[in-house]
Image (cartoon, rainbow, N blue to C red):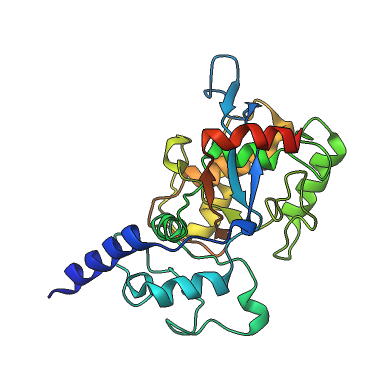
Length: 266
């Protein structure tokens, strides 16, 4: 059997027989109308986001290592370049060796969109859409939408400008941690953001992708931190990986559970 056929067989097994992630890792997010930074989201500038659930924290090195152990097709030495570029998990010492116990609790990075989607499917989930991610990212510790607060926007920009790989230190109003900081996150529909980034395939990908915000004509400078993410994601391909890009998973919520969520959150 060829290596490609074995890889496809392993992928089929993953899609059919993935294990469920622990329910306590996810928090419920009520649906809402969102004023998106994407002006093309709707003629009114708003999108309606249905209720969903989201991982409290980004997927860690420990969790992704367990995933690749269970599904070797996604190990660094085996994954095809079509699904992950040469930098995929490049900081790992070996397929089954990452680093210290402390490092294992950090968010996993250098993971492609394809690999992130596969991980989420393994726990019967998916990557969040951009609108879902933006809805949660608008919240602070007490408000669902803190974006109009200049002090809050300044705090976010401070996190982005920090030299350390840091993230939001406390959960926001939904119970989600680390949504802002220097570890950015994949979204399921990243390739629909449609922002042009000139020369994005030349030179150092990490540098050009982080500098991609220069390709946007900023109509709403107060959302600059989020617009940087739009530009960054729009410069990627499905096989792209970078040192500052991780992910978290989301799940749809069954309609019978939506009423309970609103009663709990409101």
